[in-house]
Length: 471
Image (cartoon, rainbow, N blue to C red; front, side, top):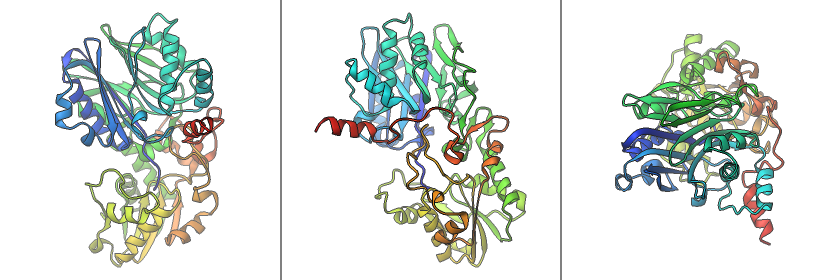
């Protein structure tokens, strides 16, 4: 495919001292698929913050020795990052820490602000000094500014939400409270649960709740602020219902783990329905249905169930490949190392190949070539997402139309370019099947943006500004 992962946020709070760092690391392991650039944990013990964050996977950054160096604490907040604003460096690792006379704060963020440039410029003109190039620091500054006038940290966050535009699911920790919030559109997922011994956990996906033994209670509503403190869980809803709900459709198609539940909808079921719809709209005579691991597997199963064509494991993923260690331009090398064809299964067969998306077409071309070399006779590719035609400004790493193959070529032309015998995309009008009764954000497919657009959409916009001002 070619789309990069989203970020993952996690927080846990108990009424007593626990192994907060260890539990937080379990949550981050479950969210590793959402970001592999960097990760971080901040533990709160009796009002004191103990942070550690660095570039790398959770297993690399949080070794047993590192985790044992944390004290026990009553709370922790964690983050695993794929950056859609700001470069890959230690300064941009999260959670963001703030030390202020009004109190400390640790902030983890998933999403992308559409008015980040304007907010940052205004803050800089008022004297703010930024240490990162991520929009998360902008959120931290605005919350801190509001805290000067607000009676509580949750009130400061509520006032900050009047200013923030775009996508944000937040987990915020003060010395006494764990707070989470979701933007009024609900672009990015967020849910919470409780362990048997009474600790509250909040996470980007429900799979992370299960990882720490917490039972999912519900999703955080778009616009809702939840405060976990001495009084238990308290909900503030003054921002709820201000905008129409718009969870990112690509969360169901690719980002989320299939065992997660997003806004009440199991991801596995959503992908099965997408595969069934592909079989209904684009039937073909074939011998086997093969899914591209991992996010194409459920849709392939749905295609098989609807069409009656047997499902087969035709591609195997190397499970021990972590971060991409090959240059991005060498996508052929990535495919050859990450995936292998099962020749015994695909030789002399007519295949329906199911993948989650096509962005540039490069990876799809190598996949088709891999199966051809393994002896596949025909390859009919089906994609469980519509064609990408527009940039995303809410956290998916597509900030330009320049590399989108569907902007320049028809499905028939793309099929010829990638070497497939035929190609079919999920119809954009079928996206409703993913969310059930809800409505998804489909802006990257149909250009229908729920918010205003950023003045400078580039991922490196703050780096460029620093370069320009430093001349």
